[in-house]
Length: 459
Image (cartoon, rainbow, N blue to C red; front, side, top):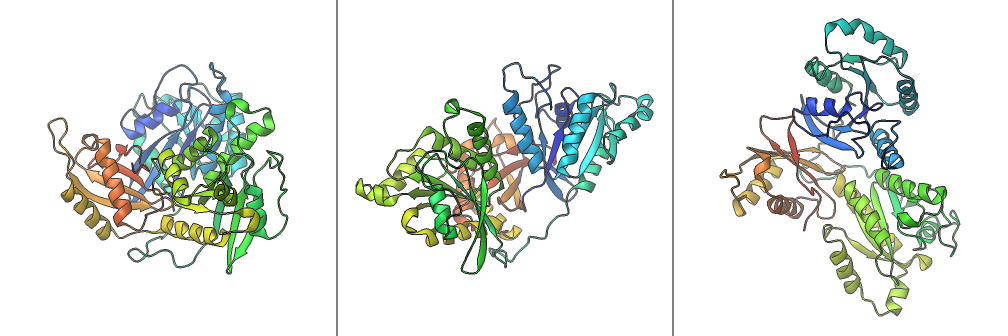
């Protein structure tokens, strides 16, 4: 189970970013009275009681962006709330209920997610009796807060902890995967006309998808169930993606959005390339989505019969991919010809191996033995006339494997050493082919995480 996502939503200027900074005890999100300052999602790791969770700030719902980025902001909000385990619906206690608040409430109700109603800007007890009008928006637990007045910070954190989803028991024996092999969701992504639908047909052994040489035939993501060796899988076929500037209409625009969504909900991503063509900017964009969401991935070179005709060897293609995507050297490469069902079973077997790796939880003892050996072999260099020190490490989640390293000051560890530690974890723990999410945290400052950046890079 990954770290729970607690997402802050609301109309512009209700104090969402201020609330995140206040809870974190540091500047995480930019705060400005101008509506629309927050565009991308901004996340911070929290440790409360015995639980970890990520608190995610989002842009204001309903904002008209001055740079014509409203659609991009809205897409980031949509991603955040779809992934939310708990929603903090923030409203302004001074202005009262607004029509836009009601629109936001209606949107949240449709999601059927656990929700806390946070009435912010309750700067004094005089406003406390006026907050109950907000219960007309949603019948959910209500918490009054004031960032300016520093009111009820502890109460809000306690409410978040109370309403998080129950922690799953994912502890296994050291280095062992979960006993039962659960159903995997495989996202099939790539630019147009690389043979994704042909691959789906080969899996399903039927003409489940329309296969055509006309680029862009698949316009929506489609789930196809198939069985192999008594195990069930879901293949998510996605639209072929074009360069953003080449998007001709709304159908193609939403095809790009759906491709991103398919990546997010997949257990393993199969990133398709055409053996007869060079890697494109679109390919790089899709791989960046995979990296950003910490998804196990396989680079699939399809139409390998054409690659052989062009006198390309598997070694040359593997080197080409490694050079192009240097930050993801751990991603395995598979060569198939979907039209002839060549090497497809081997590919599916490989997806199972990656799915298992992503679900492994190692013991704290084993993890700390690896971290201590890494520090002894290559101590982090001193910085700001101070010596960085590592105290201990703990794995807090799976899918992706998420590791928190407690230290004397997270700011003292430079990026090369973080990458070294990440490489060591991948070499010495059972995660050779999947991304690892790594956080460095200053001991004694539970609400002050410093995420290794890029935390799934190994170069």
